[in-house]
Length: 99
Image (tube, rainbow, N blue to C red):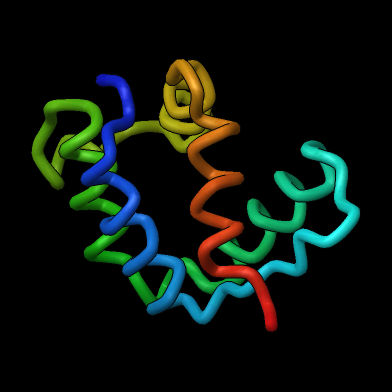
């Protein structure tokens, strides 16, 4: 997968907004934040199915159909391998945090 760039923040923000994900980032360790974000995404994935598939296809340089045919474990493993992904998600989470 390609590196995450500034434009990806807008895509991820749109996805998280559509999924109605707001995370309280106050006093959370990176791991706790990541777990809460992961379960929030899984729970609400159906609300932004097309956007998530489009985003992942763009990251991987694939088509939507190729993404749909991938094993979920392979896709998650590849996503986790992206340099700076934790920081990227943390920054998006900060933008989307609960008030």
